[in-house]
Image (cartoon, rainbow, N blue to C red; front, side, top):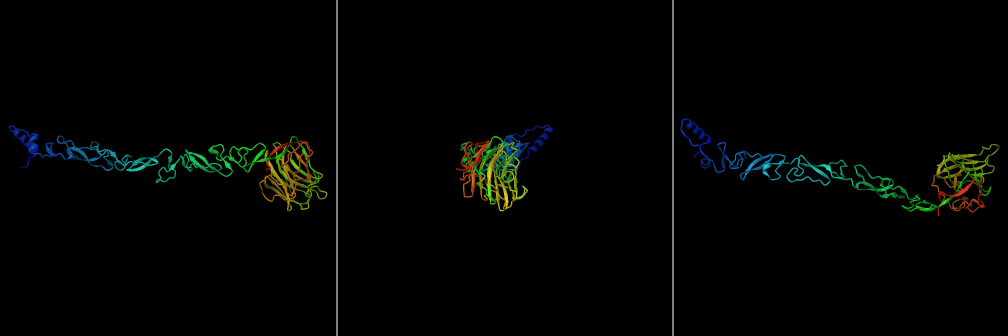
Length: 447
């Protein structure tokens, strides 16, 4: 039998009451028992399904299921999530708060529930359901500009990016540098260099081939009477220093004249500040008109041959003038005549070369003069010792071309009959006229 709707019954009851008759309203037991189904309930005087979330899922209530960001359904008499709106998820399994998780922005549920954003080198964020780096972890950085390599650089130990992007470890004189705890460190030094102070900023600051305090290796000092040469402590050459102007040593007037032949005259000198005069080795006969002079001063160095031919004292002369010498520095000067040229070398570099007559005579030296300067080893040779730039030395072996040699092995003896002994073995010892005192030079002479 078809049921009459409740609304119709109420209308009919109202009409009957208006005629003065009494009507009994239907009760729940009458509707449910006889008119609504077992899975129905009365909502707004109408039988409604207890499985419809639009009127709630409980048998005794008609409030609709309202679940945030979700399409509801009924399960076991309760509101439940059927599906979530796009971009949301029910990750806690609690129907009461619907699809509570924003899968577009939650790094713990990025794109899907329990899909955690975790990057090995960066703090992660979730953007539109995708994991992206938010910021690099401490000690990491994005240095290569490649979005596919996330915070790829370790600033703690990358020598190309030490402490910050682009901060490469390039330390002075270091062959290799490393990055340790975001600071550059010397790993190895270039040959002949060492890191003796342990300060990374100045790299391998010591040249162990020439440092008297660190000769060959750190903290290996040479004794005061020695110099570090080629990483070995070698004896210093002797020297003489003038203590007042016009200090002089005289040499024999004969014994090493070279005539018109080739020659090399060389010496080591140290010029003090304020010296306005020259330190010189003079070979002359009737100085200053004729002879050879090797001069060193604060204004210039020079090599001169003065030997007039005829009445004029300037005829037959040759003058090779070079630059001023570094003050308080041991400089090497070499005067070479060969192949019609007079050449002046200063510290191993050609300073000047001038033509010279092949028949111009070079006479014997007669004096060594100094004006408060210092003179180290001296060698006079009857040959061309140098034909191009060279590294100066005072480790001179005596050979068949050596005419005279001083201060490489034997010291200056101010009061002796031979103040300077000719180490070449000739009778060319120098007599001291006064003004010189002995000292050690800044030049090494070998063993």
